[in-house]
Image (cartoon, rainbow, N blue to C red):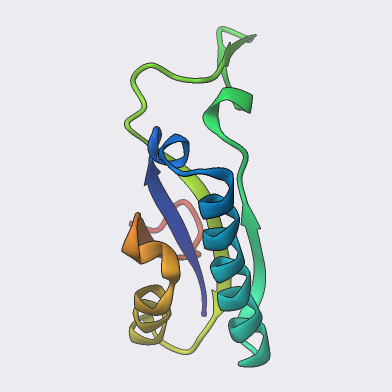
Length: 118
């Protein structure tokens, strides 16, 4: 089954690091992705740009409304994800616990499923 490991990080957290610290953490995440790839469970992984480069789109009465980031109400942002394919939820949870980001952020584990499932 496919699972997303979504990295929820505090919005201001990246700004607290130096560039060298940020690069070192990013390298750790790349090595984690490489390990998952070697294990044959990684389908995809990406880091996402900061909220200042994001936009939200909502269509109301047929008219699209675009709001550019950053978003004042946001306390967390999705910083990136790992899309993995493992047999059980427990395996996905174990991968999330191994993820370096779990040390400074929250790793949410979500199975992929049709939107009509509850």
